[in-house]
Length: 397
Ligand SMILES: *Cc1c(COP(=O)(O)O)cnc(C)c1O
Image 1: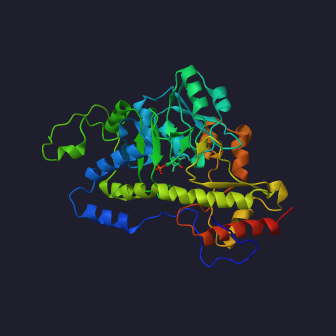
Image 2: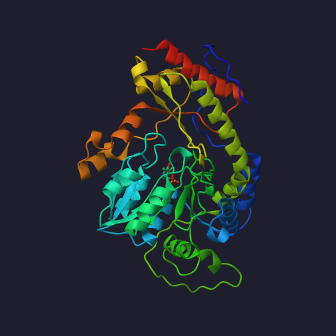
Image 3: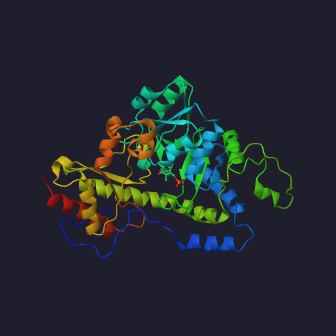
């Protein structure tokens, strides 16, 4: 239980980053151990991490496919489903650019849907309004670690013959109505980027039905019919075929060395994230100028991000000035995200106006991601709460 001390106007001595990695001696020792073996790229540690991660999320076949990023996972997932020119893929307007960029890479069209005002995940009603005969895939994002409404998306996918690919970059670990993200038959892509809940510096994983995962494995390594790492193993063979012009997306054992220990710590990391999120929400609930994030009753969020929205009508300053005030108090923040339709490439290519996705735009203009990570001490949390409440008091309308 964290008891924030309120009302102090002390400025903390050190800058508090919003999401630094949590790397311990175990990770460092395992990386060094890897460097002392002959397997520095994809090898036994990657294989072990694939099985451990697959078992952790309850993936089909208790396995997964490790790749060098979540972006690679999303790209290969769509390629596995044969997405190409003439196809449309529905993505939320409020997401990281990679979700839509991979659709462009395949020559297909990303079609945006607006998000739900409470969770900021893709809104099934908005999805229903943009599905056409060309739609092939729905790509929900479990925004900030809160699951998208998968039952409603499944119903749309079934009615229209569509695939689902989950952008699960934020979703380790996330549960939707008792089911863990990563346990479904459709492909789901996780991120192990430096700021994510589990990190391998750069890295990602795909989960899904074993036969789909095998196609993805081939496409993620040059389109080779056999794993390259097996070629150099005892009993391996020099012979391989190229069955498709695949990509070079494999994870290295140096990355897997980090991941194996990060995975063992993930449940503990998650408990601390939940504690911090609860403390923030208790401190901010009832403050008219602040809108804490929602966790629906039938889900468990991974609490990847704590996205606080300002009710700017109660303030004399806007979101950007609020961020500057936090910086002056040594509190690091970020913004997740400027919506895709407000990015110049997508706005220019598809002729979007800022008001086209009003929920995403309104959320963007009022949102701040405040520090949320397992290394936060109770004092750090109290510092963030004091800074936010202090700025609200200083600038109340
Ligand atoms: C981080 C992120 C990605 C990309 O992950 P990488 O591992 O950096 O490729 C994709 N989608 C979302 C929503 C993300 O936050």
